[in-house]
Length: 344
Image (tube, rainbow, N blue to C red):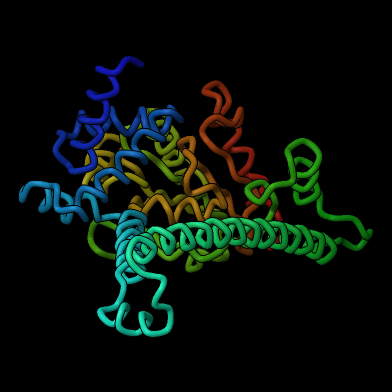
């Protein structure tokens, strides 16, 4: 990418983050955002730049209004702003010597004056930076340890569930056994692929209500996460509408949550005409639920299938062969029928 293109991209991204683009332009940005890792990184960089500009009072009055009313609508961005504000405040408090600095120390260390004292703030900054680096390394190490412990805990939970689910012959039911075999033998044994208990999740609706996932316990649930401008997401939602009609009376429930702007949901509903509830959720809550990296991109759509007891039995993302156009409806039907046929 040449310098001119980079500047143009940064300008468009900035306008996108401030809500200055029309719906069609926003959809183009979001489609590229979820398909291009490099572009996703550019957006994250521009978010940081915009936060710095806001804190440094470099935005115009209109941009400040757009920043506060549009950019800060997601919890992740509000958290980033709070974090930056706290760091700045802490640094200012640390770097500014008190008014009694010279009065306190000059009688004790009279020879340490002049240039040495003038260099003290720089020395303090260097010490704080070194301490911050050590803290960051320790924090990353502790996070890695927690992730490993969490993974081991999930594996132990899976083993316990398998043992608990044994039938009279002492062997796990075929469906659950197949899930475990696929998750451990074919795929890496990672959090997003292991059969696990579903955490609570809430979808917000346009009429200011809440769809609480646990309230559907006892049913087989297909939870679809979509990007409203994504054609594959729209097609999958259409398939789930048909399946809701075919299997709803047997205890099947489809739900969907858009992870982009809530304002885009009405158009999505108008285009797809789903026969099941569709709402919205912020991207970071979705990433946490899917046990996906919050900093990475999520291939859309994302589908989670839960059995009647609230266990996540399957989880598929947009680039999974499960979603190949020729077989996606067939695969979905097979998965739903298998879970409906299981003993409660």
